Length: 119
Image 1: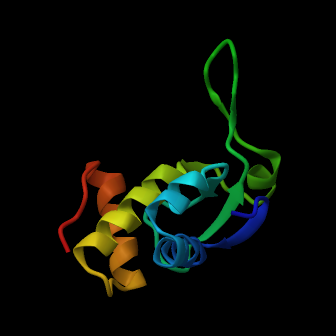
Image 2: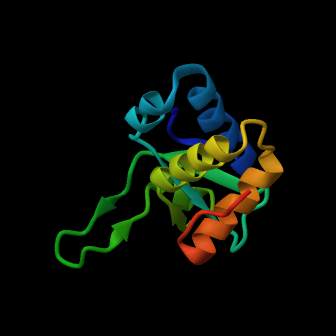
């Protein structure tokens, strides 16, 4: 996935979903050199986000160092790509015609409860 871009949560959903449908699960998990930052508590399809390189961590404190691109765009909430990938793949396995609205609900559910939503 391209890095240092500003987009929406729906854009990220579309990219991951499209890769899964065209190339399969291994291709989705092989594309893991990116990270998502956003600023809102609850995700909506229209929620702005930044896709960046994975964060660095301070060697002494082990605190996440938010990439400059995310900071410059006011994005400080981190979402690891594995969550997007896992939730989208799980949802598509349950329902091959899952909508983006259902996927964002499934993402929020997972972020809140740390488990997959049954569709």
